Length: 175
Image (cartoon, rainbow, N blue to C red; front, side, top):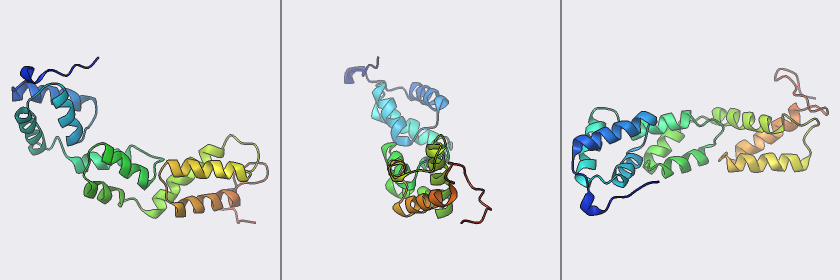
C-alpha cells in the first residue's frame, strides 16, 4: 500500500532522494517525468527532486531521448501511433517521441505488423475468411499501425495463405 506523506513530513535530503532514485532506476529505466512523480510520491521536496534529477541527467543516467529509443526497441508488435501514445503517457515530450518514432521505416512497420498478423492467424486451419481478416484488421488498429500498412498486410495475407491455411514461402511466385 502506497503512502503519500503529508507536506509537513516532506524530505529535504538530496542524498536520500538520490538513493531512492537509484533504487527506482535499478528496476528499469524511467523517464524524467516518471522519476519526478515517484520521488514526489515518496515525499521528497521539489528542491531535492530537482537536484536529484539534474544530477542524474548530468551523469548521463537520466535521458528521455535514450529512454524513448529503448522503449520503442523493447515494444515489438506496436505501431507508430501506439508507441507515440505510450511515450506521451510516460511523460516524454511530443517532439522527442515524434523524432524517435519517425525513425521507424515503413518496411520495419510493415514487417512488425505482418508478424503480429501471422501470429494471429497461425493457429487457424483454413485461409482467413472476411470475418477473420476484420478481426486481424482491428487487432492491427489497436496496436497502432497505419491504415496503409494494415491494407498491405491484409493483401499479403490473402496472397500468401493457401486454402489449407499453410503459408507460401516468400520466394514462391504468387498464383
